[in-house]
View 1 (cartoon, rainbow, N blue to C red):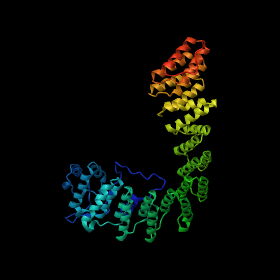
View 2 (cartoon, one colour):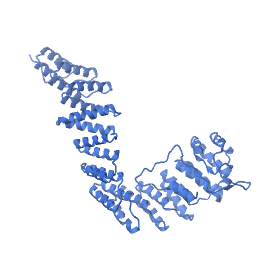
View 3 (tube, one colour):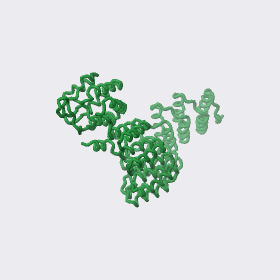
Length: 508
C-alpha cells in the first residue's frame, strides 16, 4: 500500500457536522501494512514485525526489557494493537524509555514507512505524547528516518489533536522549508483547529499559505472557515464567503449552508437562515437533520417556538426523519415560552414514535401541565399520566415536582392520591415544604375531613416542620364550623406553644 493511500485512510476528512471522535481510545482497531521491505544484515529481504509470533516480545515489553525486543523476520504485517496495549499499560516515563531504546538498538532495521506506520498507529490510538517522543527520537537515526510528507502530516494531526496548534503550525512551516508540499487534508486540519479556537487570523494565514503553494481548497476547507467566522460572530463575512465560493469554482455543499444558517440563528436572524435553506434546496442539496435542528434552535431563541412546527412539517415533506434532538429542541422551546398544550402534543408524538424524553424535560412538562390544570381542569389527567410515566421509568422526581403534583391532585379533589404521594415523598427522604402541607390541609378541610387534616399536622411535627399561621388558621376555622370548640382550643393552644399566634381563635 502506498504512503499516499495510507495517509488518505488516516486523514480522510469527515464532514464538519458529523461526529469527529470515532476512534476508540482503548483499543486500536486498525493495522498498518508494511509497504516497503527492509534488509537484514544477511542481505535478505524481510518485513519488520513489532510483535513476535510466540508473544515473547510482548512479555519483554511488559517486563521492561527493551534490550530483548528484536525485530526479525515474521510476517508482512505489523500488528500494532497488542504492542500499543502493552505500551499503554506501562507508566509514560518507562514507555518513552522503551521506545527510545528500541530505536537506538534497531535503527538500522527501520524503514521510513515502518516508522510512519507506528506514528500513525500511536496518533490514531490518541497516544500523542508517545508519538511526539518517537518523532523527536527520529533525528538520532540519521537520514534513513528523515521525515517525508506523510511524517509531517501525521505530526500536524497529532499536535492538533493534543490542542497544541502553535506547534502544528511550526511543523507545517518546517515541512514546507524541507521541500514537502502539504496536501489539502493537512492544510484543512490545521485551518479547522485554528477556527475551533476562534483564531481566525491564524486560520486565514494558513489559507493564504495554501494558495501560495498551489494547493486548491475544497468545500471542506471553506466549511471550516465558514464555521469559524460564525463562531466569532462575523456572520456577514461568512455569508459573503458562501456566496463567493462559486467564483472560486468550489461548489458549496449542505454543510456550507448549515454553517452559515447556524450563524444566522445564533444572532436572531432565523428567517434569513430559512432563506438559505430554500436556496440550498433549489440547488438540489438535501438538508440533513442537523440543518433542520439549527432552525429549531434559532426560532426557540427568538421566542417563536411555533415556527418549529413549520420546520417539522418541512422535514417530513423532504423525507428527513426528525431525531430525538429535533423533538427535544422543539419541546424545550414550547415549554420555555409557556406553550403547554402544544408541548403536550409534541410529547405524545415523541412517545408514540418510541423516543425517550429525558427526565429534566418531563419534569418541566409536568410542572407546566400542573400549573395550567389549576385553571383548565381537563389537563389534570394528562399531568397525572406524565407523572405516572416518570414513576414507571428511570426519571428522578425531585421535591419541587412532587409539590406541584400534590397541589394539582388537591385542586382536583383527589385527596386519597394526594395523601399517598405525600407519604411516598417522605419515604423517599424528601421533607415537603410548608406550602405543600398547607395545600393538603386546605383541601381536606374543604371536604370536611378534619380528622385527616389533623393527621397531616401531626406528620408536620414528626418531620421537624413547624406549621405556619395559615396551617393553624385553616384547622381552627374548620373545627369552629363543625362545632368542635374544645378541639379548636387544643389546636390554638398547640400553636401558641410553637410560638405561632393564629388569626383565627376558637369560638366561645
